[in-house]
Image 1 (cartoon, rainbow, N blue to C red):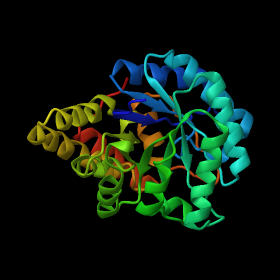
Image 2 (cartoon, helix red, strand yellow):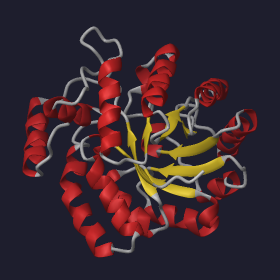
Image 3 (cartoon, rainbow, N blue to C red):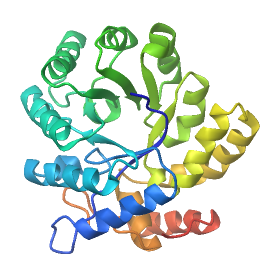
Image 4 (cartoon, one colour):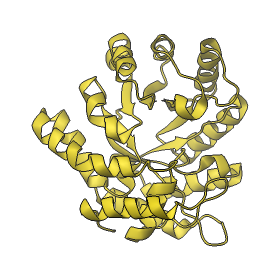
Length: 294
């Protein structure tokens, strides 16, 4: 399975009563497909997966796969700090036709590197689907070291790593050890270009919810060896990338999407609406950068 380009970490739009906005989710996916993304990623951090019930989680995955209709790849979130739960989510994604799954490092448990390896190995052994390992120590409290990634890439269905450690040196070491046996995806929009320079092939993007074509263009330019063009687009994107992290993700991106006319709706507790001061700063960046709606 080739994974390359701009994949968008979907928000989960909610209606005012707190239920999933199926129509809005479908519209958002249609917009992204029209703008040329390589794939969509439902039920990750940006999709508020931590506050979805498993029934809701599976429903969102089903909608995403159905709406994509094989026009783009679907990498379904299947992460949990409970290995058995992650296996169940992976099985559901495979049965429904997802192209791959995204699995976060177990959070809160703080497993050792051996525990991390065994967690992913069990999922890989139990479910025949491509697995994107998601390393985001700022969320989980545990970093996957390059030596563990190297062990994991020996497993045939570990196909990629989404790297959101913010450590470009570590990411470079992963590529040195794994080479083309493993696809490296950026998990940080602002670091996508440096990660491409270290052997990365794409991004699972937050900013892609509102600027999917721009992010896709930057990656395409770099992979076509137009580094000057890629740098130009990177610098256009950078203020927006930074603004979308004025507060915890996905608070700013849902605020921006709501302002621009995309489906977003309210956040679920413990996330709260963006502070007015940060909202005004965010919207000023959006306006100055010329971001438009669907």
